[in-house]
Image (cartoon, rainbow, N blue to C red):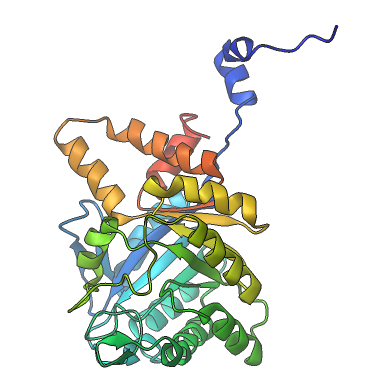
Length: 328
């Protein structure tokens, strides 16, 4: 009779436990979200996200050097402009904050860093919504041209990948068509395909100054009661030409991550968002939890659910824990 190894036998000894782990993590899958702002010689701590900062372009190298030293080689840039208007024109301006940051980073770091840019209008519009308005409603179809123009300007300035987060219907196809028509057929798109209308975004909106001035975003972001809708959104974006599918947030939506992973045959990303980071920071500051252990546990949970790429403000810490053998 064929004998099987009992799970308990595989728990004997640290080296054996590592060898047979079902879930493995490495630093190449980590993406660090980073805020860049106009001005010079500024590094502003974000009050609701202790340890995270807004950087002017001349000081981004401080964080980028630290990331590279930790082993993190991918970043996601979010721009904070000085000028906002009804249509968010700073989003695609040649001298926009993201465009300037991209050119500076690519000059200094060339192929050392993989740079992804968030494509959305909320940081750039005076009303804080993710697209162009028609009255008090977001005009989905008119917003597509602006999002496509923004994505193209990012790629032209040096972005390695664009990540539309606006949740407008059809924006992946619109961006893909625009990039292809301008000779950027190989530029990849990571779609925020499954993005829920979540209270976990609060600290980010403080960091980026992107809270809507009226109403909310439930008309275009997803209802957190729904998981089948998330699968549908993911499949639609795959059909439109997305190369990577993101689920956002991560912590409370790992069931959705697992379902998306089973439904599609593309890499799946999850974004451990600002509210998740702030909760861990606050709990640790009060002495209620062990910050380092919680970082490890929540990261492994995301990978166990099926994540291939993990966007997290704790990316350098996770990379350190990987090197120390505490995770991975």
